[in-house]
Image (cartoon, rainbow, N blue to C red; front, side):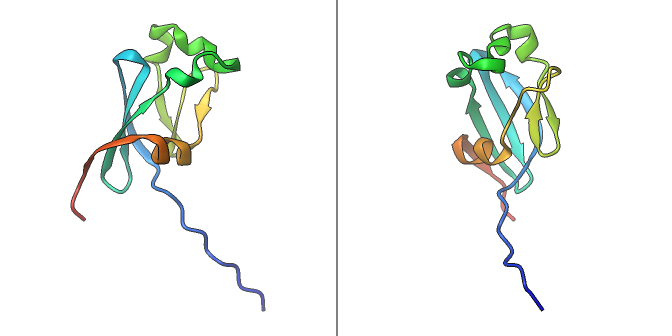
Length: 91
């Protein structure tokens, strides 16, 4: 019988709020809250559309990550690992 090693998964996004200067306030499933800066993405491919702040503000939670109406999304692991944590709830 083969056994598969379980790979730990980083927490996923459960709430998102767009902020000024193309930042996102993210609440994660482990209680942590972080700020993710999207500005480095704005000059690349499909992410250029996010420069329109009205469009940027249409961000939503989708499958543990964030997404916009035209299917731009950011890897949930990237969001967790690269966000500046501002709070962690006690477990």
